[in-house]
Amino acid sequence: MDQDSPDGLLFKDHDFSSDLLRQLNVLRQNRILTDVSICAGAWEAPCHRNVLACSSPYFRAMFCNNFRESREAKVQLKGIDSTTLDRMVLYVYTGEVHITAENVLPLMEAASMLQYPKLFEACSSYLQGQLTPSNCLGMIRLSEILSCETLKKKAREVALTYFPEVAASADLKELCALELRDYLGDDGLCGEEEKVFEALMVWIKHDLQARKRYMQELFKQVRLQYIHPAFFHHFIANDALLQSSPSCQTILEIAKRQMFSLYSTTSAPDLQPPWHVPPRNSYQDFLMLLGGRKDNQQTTRDVLLYNPQTDQWQSLAKLPTRLYKASAVTLHRSTVYVLGGMAVGVGKSVLSRKVYIFSLKFNHWRLGQPMLAARYSHRSTAHKNFIFSIGGVGEGQEVMSSMERYDSISNIWESMASMPVGVLHPAVAVKDQRLYLFGGEDIMQNPVRLIQKHVVQDGDENDQERVRPRRAARGADCHRGRLHKEDSCLRPSVQQICQVCRHERPEDAPRGHSDGEQAVCDGRAAADHGLQHRGLGLL
Image 1 (tube, rainbow, N blue to C red):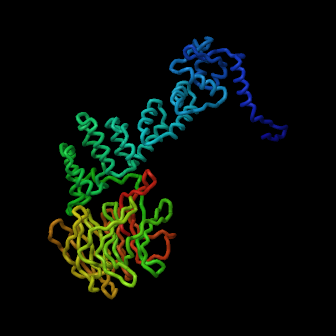
Image 2 (tube, rainbow, N blue to C red; image 1 turned 90 degrees about the vertical axis):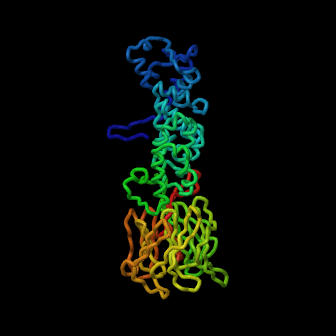
Image 3 (spheres, rainbow, N blue to C red; image 1 turned 180 degrees about the vertical axis):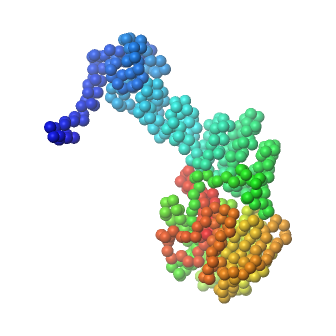
């Protein structure tokens, strides 16, 4: 655009530079005013020294610093084939080059050697667009040879994002121990810890004699606290290769105590550092809303999921049946259990002892092992691999003081010691092997001014006691080793949470649901754009 000035008009011909370059290329093609030939073996391309010197620091140093090449009529370039050199000369005179899968590597090497950074990055961008889980590790090798940080960074992102698929490639077996440790220990790795463990074992067994000495250090990178206890029990705890390492045995014993022993605590000094490891960055929190009454009318089967990162709700697979005042709890950071409740049918409601299990990963409901007693208006909580179902209203419409416990590993329900006082809707939390029941209601919905404590034990003995009276508790949870509770004379509700503590509902949550269960779901978006989970917690 022309610009006016006080003393005249500043004229800019924006096509002049490109026209000039085009005419210089015509001169080159006709060998007019050319003063040097760039050669690759017997092949040569007549050029202008000043054009080459202006286009690249490499040629500027060659022709402007009294080197021998500045006086020679022909300059031989080693390491570049004639086809690639022809494309490079054309790029110098036109600013254009056609990059393909066949020529990208020779072009990139030549651009690096002759110092054409924009062409180098263009080749890098092309390769980044070709990245897949099957070739990303090879691309990282290439990027290291070419010293291309942008390609290396992108290829590493692909390797971490699609790690389960990358682990299935042959290239993973060729990594050195330090490289594999770098991947397994990265917070950005996307993949279930079970897949991380399997990848480690595949790598070690590929060259067992040479690699087993790295097993201890690499095994520490597997975040065992995020592995499903059933997988740990069946595939890790008694693995012969791990058992052959005393250090790995120690890690396994710590993990066993933490997963399966009701006596263990997460604050034990010997759990540092194997157990206190944060989740990987790829995991995120979700909120689930289960059932309830829709528009204060019919009990609904709807299941909704709220993603705070996108601020959106989405529908999940519906509950298998309409349930009134069931209890929901999460276990192993992966599964939602809906326990008991009143099964609402056409003209008839039936008290249920059924257990429905929901997998966020597969968006699927299935039947679990039924409880020993049918109940509704009860509360449930999870501790280690156990679920406790507490109180509620029984088949005779009486307030139940009984409690039962479900072992998710053996798939068995067993009776526990009864509460001193049967209550409805107590706020429940677990801390240091003690299960606390705050307040609750009697059958007439009057608040109960009481705290009850149950000592969680491995054996058959159980200890129940009253602690002291207080106002009815609205909700309770154990967060970062501390109990938190809310006081209210209103109807109590349980609020339990895994990893994060929240008491608010997003303002734009779908309206019209009451008496529904809510769950905080700590999961992740999978590489295939489906949903996978890391953990869930009841709100």
